[in-house]
Amino acid sequence: MTVGGRHYRGASGLFACHMRALRNGLNILDPETLTRLTPSDLDAYYRDEATAAPRSSTSRVDSPSIRRSAPYCGSDTMVTF
Image (cartoon, rainbow, N blue to C red; front, top):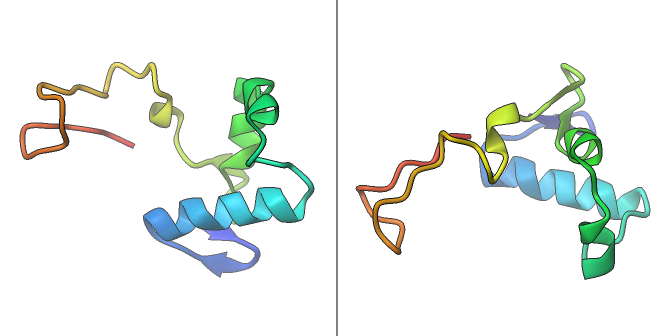
């Protein structure tokens, strides 16, 4: 993922998206702000600047690709992003 002209992988890319939002005036630390985010807002939030595409459409919480067979994240847990 590219944010601010730098390429990131994994969690550092998500962190870069959070920092970009804060720099752009989106107060992601305010719960009220988070409740008003639309799917379109989230696509913009996680946009890869190199491709102009959102990070992944499968990263939604309600995605069928997220399956958890235990109440913890162990080796039997599959999460697809």
